[in-house]
Amino acid sequence: MKNFLSVHDVKDVEALAKEALKIKQHPFKHKKLGKNKTMVLVFLNSSLRTRLSTQKAAQNLGMQTIVLNLGQDSWNMEYEDGAIMKGTTAEHIKEGAAVISEYADIIGLRCFPSLTDRDRDYGEFVLQQFLKNIKVPLVNMESATVHPLQSLTDLITIREFSKKKRPKVVLTWAPHVKALPQCVPNSFAEWMNRADVDFVIANPEGYDLAPSFRGNAKILHAPKEAYKGADFIYAKNWSSYEDYGKILCEDETWMVNTEKMSLTNNAKFMHCLPVRRNLVVEDAVIDSKNSIVIQQAGNREWAAQSVIKKLLS
Ligand code: AN0
Ligand code: CP
Image 1 (spheres, rainbow, N blue to C red):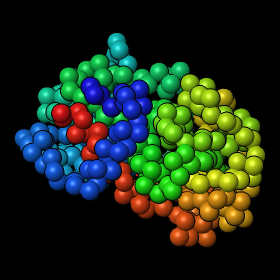
Image 2: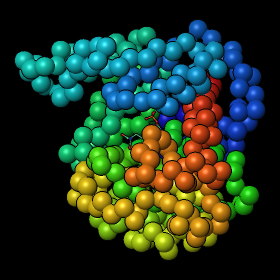
Image 3: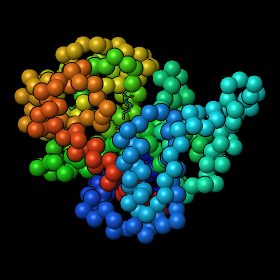
Image 4: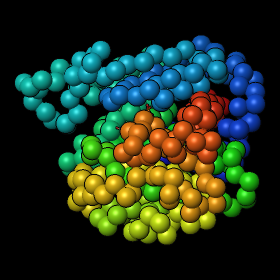
């Protein structure tokens, strides 16, 4: 593996999930692999889980870690080629990324979408600008269109908690007050499409994911039908891809609640977190024994470790 940018860098998602679960059993077995190597984690946006779990994963492999909150701790970065830098940006990505690369053996990057310019976001402009100017492997810690460390985590969590070989997994849109990226659902869909699961997406009209991400997944525009017989309910809000970055629906009947959960096959509740309670999911569901959001978040460490291990090997 040269970089970990999306599912396309992974040959076999189920094999990688198995590897991550093996690492969970023996986290320090490869402590020598990263000796005298450094991972620099660059954040253009907030993070709790990714920030902590990725550092911990690298440290479990013996690496040193440095976290940089770009634009807050460092200079404001310019990304446009040929820019005349008379504005607020003090350093160009050409030097910025190249210099980070001098100190790093692996770089992690979080760079959310603008949600205003679809072509720029879906072309992964910022991530590509980094990629062009570094000479070490890059790990995507959520970019403009995907969040592969989360999706690998989600797959290993499903395998860990599933009694069936081929569980029914439902990704359901849920309401939110802020326009959020499509990264988590896009990525979840691409990974589930490659995994051995019965995958269904439920979202309101106008919220269909981009065709390249939803693939051949079954799409339903009403929540109740989707919940029937589900083994996993995976909730997430996202803004519209079609009417790019817009909030088109605030219908609270899409919130995950006990009434809809009762239609499932005693489904486990999943969410990548952070989650807004009683907007995305009712307290009674996230506080129930069927909620596995904390175990899911815990698995971020093993997902990250399996990826970093591959990049070091
Ligand atoms: C982000 C998102 O929806 O992509 C990060 C999730 C991991 N969520 C928020 O900004 C609330
Ligand atoms: N799920 C996730 O990526 O969480 P953070 O945004 O807190 O890193």
